[in-house]
Image (cartoon, rainbow, N blue to C red; front, top):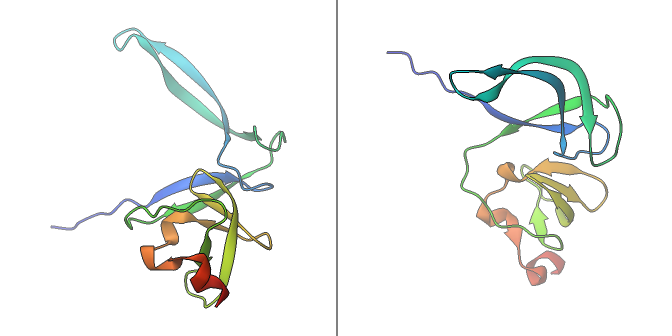
Length: 121
């Protein structure tokens, strides 16, 4: 038997990195379900964070690692790197790092989140 795994993803605004974005779409009434259901999605996108119409969306893969608790101001070790940076802002699963980098929180393990004393030593 062949096992298929489904890659989980999220989408972010390609301009500001926010997850508060989406595609234009239409919905139709389903009389059996008694609710509107998605009918068609369009290529045009929007972002409520930066306010741009059609900024384009960027796909980010979500990993299956256990959730890690991170808050703005925490220091993290960037995965696959020795760099230690401060988390400036968090939007959904997106971490905005000092210096402008953006990573998916799903890429972190508990070992990547550092105490401030560990980060500055």
